[in-house]
Structures are given as structure tokens and as C-alpha cells.
Length: 150
Image (cartoon, rainbow, N blue to C red; front, side):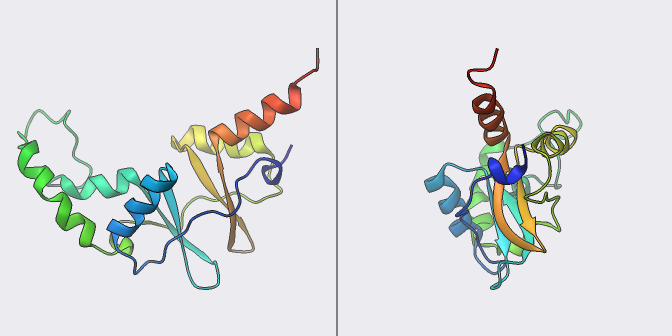
């Protein structure tokens, strides 16, 4: 089974000049955790995840609550969310994201997701976004392929 058999098409996208607010709105309405960032010709240039949106709230990008050295005022940090939402997508997006091809085996895509702790990966054909594949897509495809088999 290849990625093309299980991937989602008709993916909601954004441009690098869009605001984070607009991308979070799309993620919330579509109940998805990532939005591919494309140029006008569908060339993939990045991905924004919900995690990418929250990281700017921390005083130093990448700091987590497990950091016992620095105390955090989480109430004050939350007030910064409105400012984060006004930023442009290109300020927080992951550039040149890991991708798979429609012809790659689904278990190859799953192995990349496992190694990188990703829940979804853009599917690209000759640099153009053609879909997204998620862990759920792969499991659903494998399960349905095995249905009725002993």
C-alpha cells in the first residue's frame, strides 16, 4: 500500500504572509493540528502546527514547564497570545518540512512519523503539495486492507 491510497486531499493551506490568527482559525474549524504553507503555485514552503503557535508564548523558544530553574508566570504568558496571533505565519512556520511522495510505502511514512514524533506529514509530488497523510490515515488504510482476511 502506498501513501496515495490513504492520504487526505483537498487540504486547507495558508500563505507565509497570512496571520497566525487566520491559521489557528483554520485549524480550529477543521479540527486539524497542522496547516501546510504554500506559494501561489502550491509549492510547499513550510508547515505550521499548534505547537508552533504556542512556543512564542515562552520567554525562550523551546522552554517547557519542566524547567525548574526559571519560574514562569503562566497568567502573564497567556496575555501574550493576542500578540502572537498578529504575527505572520513565516515567523513561526517550520521551513522545508519533511515530506513523503504519493508513491512511498505507507509504512515508510509511518516510520518517519515515529522517528520524528509527527502525527502527520505533507505529501508532495515534484515540490507541489498534493495532500497530507496522518497516523490515523495509515492505520485506517491498513485496517481496511486487512478486513476479512484471516
